[in-house]
Length: 198
Image 1 (cartoon, rainbow, N blue to C red):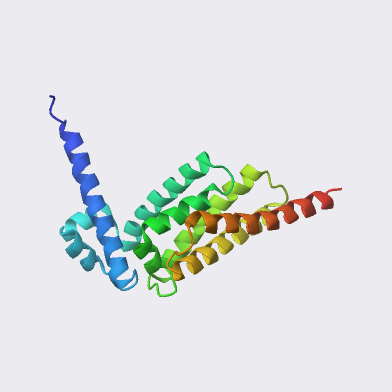
Image 2 (cartoon, rainbow, N blue to C red):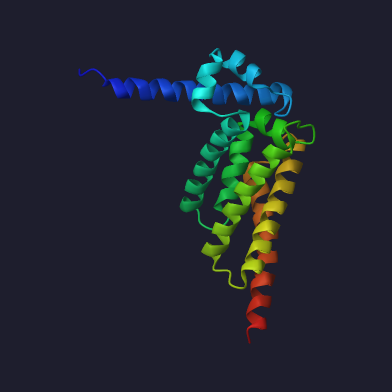
């Protein structure tokens, strides 16, 4: 069996270090919340040196952003598989599978701060814009932006409520309710936009 090339070994070490740091951040967010977590907490939990941390990330925000980019890529892929509002069930399932993390981030008792919530909200707005394109929503850029903000705000409210209920309802049921409510609102908006063009 051929030996891995030197750059493959380095790549694996880089991947392993990044994963250790991401996992340590998540563990600390669950334990202390994002705002209270320091870089020192993260490197202690990951059992790596400060130089290793800074070789990969400029600060804890950059580390968090890398983790959220992984989530964004996952949700975009799921949305490709289920166009329209396909991201919503994927996000709910991800939240259910990582309940302590999501409760720490967006639940009522979450202490992860505005930065994390803003990043997640921005991801949902992006996914909502993609959904609106798939659904063929027309109108001015402002109307589409407002609709994307509406979807994202509604989803964040539903997600927060669901997490505060300890995710007792099945993700599929919550997703069905969310989609029904959002699609009714969007249908009215699409009808109004069509009528205004006549």
